[in-house]
Length: 300
Image 1: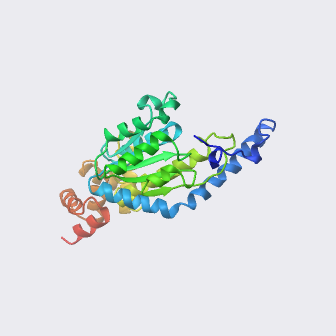
Image 2: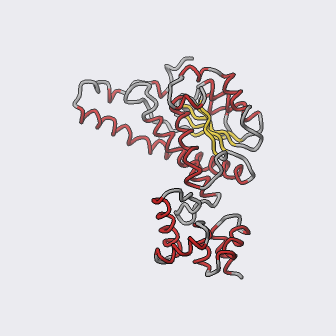
Image 3: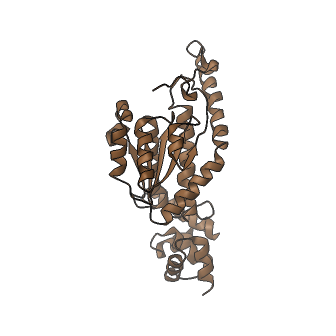
């Protein structure tokens, strides 16, 4: 594989002497480069928005979301996938991370795994169905495992998204939507866990968060489907109800308890002025959308 022409494999002039400068200057150089990442992601916002709408539409129809990648890219996908169930109360199989080399590769480097197109095809074939969404992540955009996985996913009727840091790549060509924030050469040449990885993390945050917002998992800016699995989160749930209903936390706590711990149900009950059963019914009729449920409950 010829990588000499890839942006992510280029040499950064600004850090050529980074091994000779003071530690403070070292981190200043890194920070100056990190500032460029958000600007690069900004250039991709129209394509990120398209991908969010595509993902939300497929999830709404019963599809699932898969992140696929190798090395750092694969780990970022696994990380994002693992954070969705507790944050948004989703089933654990709704968003999944697939990494070259299997789950052990999250902790132990298995870089050679990324070279196998055959394994990329096999890993996708064993998991997806038509109607799912597969997001391939690769800084170079040329990782054989990831490119083959996205190609196989598309062949099987999945919607596909590419997240890469090199424009015009094979991965981008294989996907329905290609997102390619060009962050430029890394401070340490080729170390794409740095700027490229940061850009990928930002994009994945937007994709999953945006899709969850579109699915009604957020009311105003509150994550109302959060699983309150510890004391900190139980306190957060009470505060969210209080903020949404513009009431005190004591009232919010009682409403939350009456709603069986459902933040959404407690909000609908308080805002619409109905009992928990009516709030639950309104939410069911509204497909879990809090604003719509409030309107329906107020019509009674």
